[in-house]
Length: 157
Image (cartoon, rainbow, N blue to C red; front, side, top):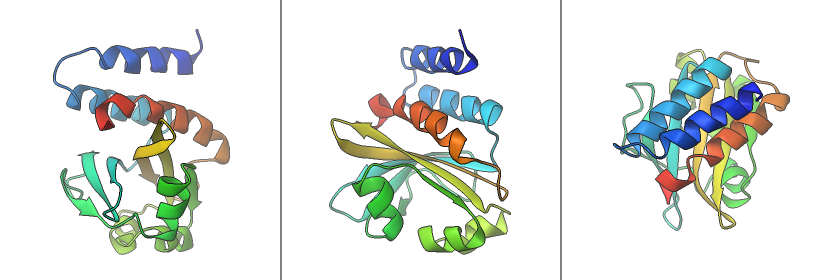
């Protein structure tokens, strides 16, 4: 069994445990930390028709759970939320292009942002977002991050 298969097995088992969705969110966080590393990780739920996403999980105190973020009407929102495509940014310019809270993200020395949509039935339920120092993630990482994100579907339906 490859490392990714082992990770996916752990995440699928986490779906069966009590205290959902926290147990699954924590398992995804632990898997992403071990596999890719990050300065902070967030799991966002898409709120179609509102222009917002809601933070469901965060590894960072500056990003409280339950907070709304106006991402649906942004260019980033068109790529990730509307088109269901993963997005990788690796520069200050990318962060400013994508996020209304770019200054806060950059203050944490995060220029790399790997964002993978959680898709179900052709629509985006939410997003797994990993943030780290510039060039922490490569395009080759996105396939695995996107696959890990899919394990979040039951928690975001």
